[in-house]
Each structure stands twice: as structure tokens, then as C-alpha cells.
Image 1 (spheres, rainbow, N blue to C red):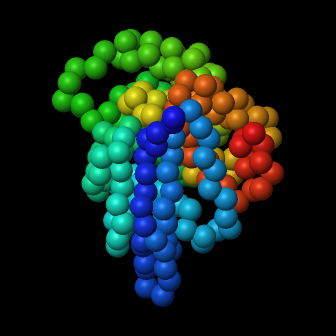
Image 2 (cartoon, one colour; image 1 turned 180 degrees about the horizontal axis):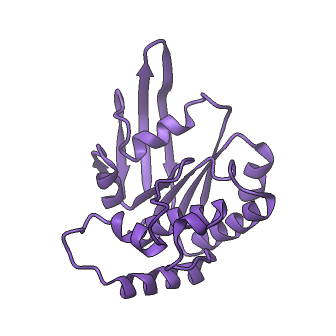
Length: 208
């Protein structure tokens, strides 16, 4: 029997004048694509920001592998195996792919060999269908390639659950197809993927 990897129980979050999440309970399993569908303002991103430690819930609990955890920062989320790619990328255009990946690591005090890091990025790229040149400057990459760098940053940190917040909003139809291939590759490797969208046709496609 499959067990839940991450579980949210009765998560509540209010802002002045609105309740973004009202006792939301949901669980996520490895090896599955989980889709969150809803219009803008429905609370999808708020819920995921809570999961990733970017927002504090007013109530509720989070469990990882059946154990209650406190996720009060992205660092805490990463420690639980959770990664997130936002709609707006957090990359430094003047630096290379490998330099962006290294800068995203918490172990900055450690000496990280750029060649070794580039080798691992290439390995992850091949494994999941996320083709990108580790030594390319981010400013020279297409939007779709930059998104791949963000996904690779999460995979480099050994994430087991990847949150994709409206990932197709900035992609061409061809790039969307390539992203869906990568998502299926992630699921085939027992990763959990949360796909946030307000596009019903995409949710139906990736949920097959």
C-alpha cells in the first residue's frame, strides 16, 4: 500500500479581508502527479507557499513521512525533500547555469568544484530530459531553458517533491510538451510533482 510522502492537515491562512485557505487537507505520494486547479486568487499558490516555508499558516499541521514537521523557511522545506519552481525565476542572468546552481546551495562555506557540479547537472539533465549546457550564461537561455535550470536547482538538492507554480504560463506550446515529458520522467523515478494551473486542458493532459 502506497503511503503519503507529504500531508497537509486543516491548513488555514487568512489575510485582511479574505480567507485564502480554509482548513485545507491534502496528501501527496511519490511517483504521482498531483494537480491543483483553480482560477487566480483561489489559494493555490498560498497553500504551496505555506508548504515551502514562504508563508506561515494560521492553523493546521504538516507531516513528512508520517512525522509532523515545522516548515518555517525554504531551507526547512528543502530538508524535508521539497523543492519549488516559482512563476518568476530566481536566477542571476550574468552567471552561468552551474554558478547559479552552486549559489543556490546552503553549503556555501564548502569548497564546491565547478567541474564536478557541472558533471552532476549534465547527469540530471540527461536523466530527466532537461537539456541545458551547464556552462551557458543564463542571459543567453530561452525562457524554457531557464525554467529547466530552476528545476535542476531543486533536483540538485535531492528534492523528492517538486512544486511547479503555473509552469506553462511563460512557455511556448513546444516547451510545454517538453516540460510534460520531463514531469513524466520525474514521476517514473518515484518523484512527486505538484502541478499548479488554471488551465483545465493542461491538467487533464498531465494527469493521465
